[in-house]
Image (cartoon, rainbow over all chains, first blue to last red; front, side, top):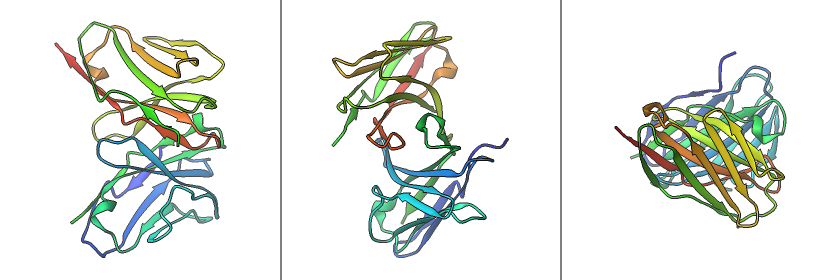
Length: 114
Length: 111
């Protein structure tokens, strides 16, 4: 059973471009969580999705950020018109249910905005 | 809001015990976690403890929870070079699926 997959591992974008981060959950997992980690800080919750539904997006900025988890395919975190402050590591986790101790993390995508 | 704090660095000699400490503010946290992050890798769940427990032991790992002081610690016995990593403390928020994270403690092993 492959773990949580994230791609790309590293992404460089110029200011104003769009960034698309992908997360493929573990097989059998229908819950996906996105977190952001700024340098020398802990992870910050962004959004929680189930298949085709956003359950909780309270940690996600209202503008420029969106997330989806379609019926087929990976979950996508999309950042439009990136700014330097978006530079961070973005981690995805998946779980089979809502119990957080079952959250398995991917290796993260490191986004650098130049 | 809720906060989790831990010191940024800990240096220990190989073979000694490492004790990584964490304090949190949300007394209603149900689950408290320790994660390990090796360079370039994702976060690996090491262990977790329910808030109604005081201690949990798993091989070389011992977790102690002091609810009164809102203090959590992770003890690694017989620390090895492979234990070099950043260790994150995390607590569940009201929703239980939202985790509140500390900034991580970098464990440095001296030969």
